[in-house]
Amino acid sequence: MVSKLIDQDGRFLEILDRLTTKSIDDYYNPYKLFEWPDSLPEEMWWMSPELTTTHGTEAARRLTEKELHALSRYESINFYSLNVHGIRELLIEVTKRIHTTGFETPSDFFHHFIGEENEHMWFFAEFCLRYGKKIYRQPAGANVEIPRSNVESLLVFARILIFEELVDHFNSRMALDDRLHETIRGINRIHHQDESRHIAFGRELVTALAVDVKQTSTEEEMRDIAAYIRRYMTYSFETLYSPQVYRDAGIKNPHDLRRQLLESPQRAEFEKSVYRKTAKYLEKTGLI
Ligand SMILES: [Fe+2]
Ligand SMILES: [Fe+2]
Image (cartoon, rainbow, N blue to C red):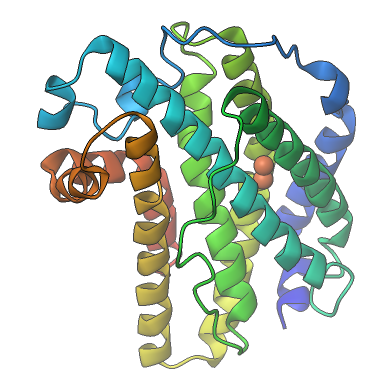
């Protein structure tokens, strides 16, 4: 039982205590915190150029600076839209588990997690609706079926962790990028601050769940779990490449561009850099 593993793990208990206290001390009112100018200037980067999907590619060389700025604007709206959808999914899963068997001890932290994620979803949606006039639809394949078994919670929390680490790669960089508007830097900075706690917690919980699952699983089952996690990582990364975004930015053959970009050597490098720490952690845990 995972609850036993958690309750016997002094280190985990100490981390839980520290993260919960930090959530209380750092608590802010998101509805008052941000400055929302009526509009943001179009002629500038809305996303660090190094984090856009065309960076360093042949395709980017064919575009003017104006077109690259437009592309960064739509990619940023897509990025925050993906956050809105990802948060809705994780809220459903964490809410399903709070105060249930196995999750007695982390439930107190879950209250902060759920509260904070609700607020993140609000400010990401607000950004999309104000400056993009829409939230991009959730890409297909998001509801990849999670097997109903004792590994369900492991896969759920591994997915949440992978998603949060992917997002944090972008947040932590954009928070410090002085080419971006202060409103953009601000939401990235605040999100990064909260996510540092969620990620620290997620790594501990996924480690405990992995130990629990390993005790009752065959090698073949562990290989299936690894394959599932790898598929989820690839899927999540590829949602950054949106044909709708390319179309909105005025690109003629958006599906062709997406395919070219996904097959480019730059994609492999970009994916590796986004998941560098995550992959190292998952390998150490023996999950991939
Ligand atoms: Fe969040
Ligand atoms: Fe989070």
